[in-house]
Image 1 (tube, rainbow, N blue to C red):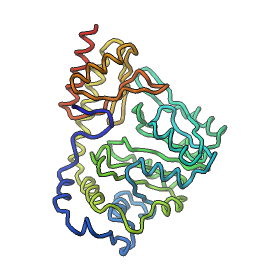
Image 2: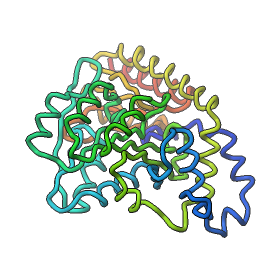
Image 3: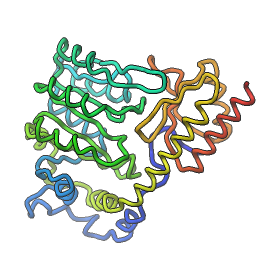
Image 4: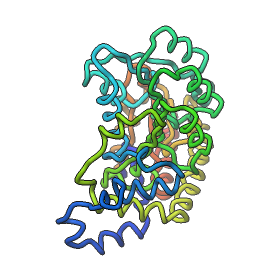
Length: 341
């Protein structure tokens, strides 16, 4: 079965990551970290501090971006307070506020001919009306695949200075946006979340990190673990950070394959392939073929995400697999379209 429904990276991690596992010994498995004796939380947070030129105390670690989103909500949101989220978003965004008795407020994304875009004017109007304590921005957004533009992000940060603004970059697989890092110093309530699950192909390792603005001592304390973190996960993550050329090669293949999805599936009558900055593409299809296409692909051992939400219920979200897997998906959908023309 080709599984392309969970936004995992089927290329797998860099060889250097496997080397960490081969070197694992009693130190990794039986003993707690002693990084705190050197004045920092962990070897990974110290490495990220050096990479991003940010105080190590302003870096938090968690079990992927999912865990860090939960930590933000648990730290800052109370009952009946508001969390502002995209209307088209990961289902977990819509659930997480309920865990503390908080309330969701949704802001729309605009659907254009072949892409979704952020509507900052409407965003700011809703923000002023609702006064949320925390707001989430996903860039690239799941499942629409679009990123927020730099000027749009700055406009929101300027407006929402009294709220905790979280930029979730879990699906980012290109070079770091330097403006985002600069904004962390200018906007003290800003938080950037990233993960090793997608681009670095380490979903099973469960490790992500947050970069904090200067007002987030409460979150830093909330996330701190005196006995440290998973020592193997930390070393594997560092090995991934060191393997830049390996991951640049994967990113290039993904970019090439996205172009193939745009070109080939975009030609099928009734299909719209939306532009994506993420490791997946969103495809709108005629509603009447949804069940038959799903059955057709299942018979060919291809598993993709058939969206089943109020706003997106005639859409496919196809994770970018290996080039061989992507070719099989494109060929299978083209075959289905030809047979059912």
